[in-house]
Image 1 (cartoon, rainbow, N blue to C red):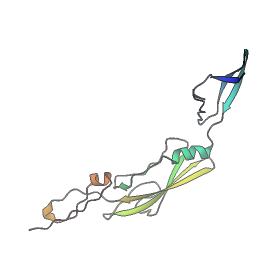
Image 2: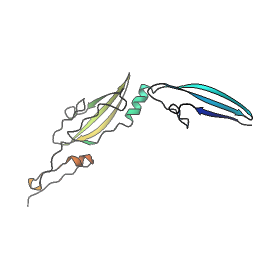
Image 3: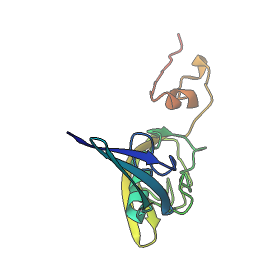
Image 4: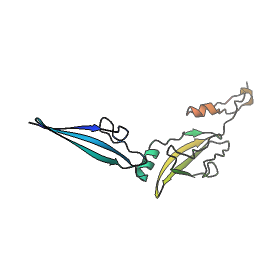
Length: 170
């Protein structure tokens, strides 16, 4: 004879059909019913359970793990100032504050510039940081070959490539 336990879950927003617990930013309570069977004997018992909310550090980790920035940007780009979790505060540090300031505003010159920006996320008394290496260039219009110049277009940077073209007059 084998003892078996079957569970009935009352709220699948707290625990799904596969038994996976679903945390949230608030504690959640629900009931589960267990049916214990041993041969012909059955016993049913209700249990109240509370799934505790994410801790502040868990919320920060969930946010930072998928946070991405473009590798290449132009003068129209601004660093994000919000996250999906609206309670998390965001701030920036930059290796070149004259190129990208602490508010995420970009001020580019004509030369290609590498910048390391540090994302700072804060929630309550917890904080996490993540660094990104970015390259910025002031976009220009395409100039005709007779003007003998190096050409850079915004679309080339969005694709993540840099093309330099030089032209000589014949």
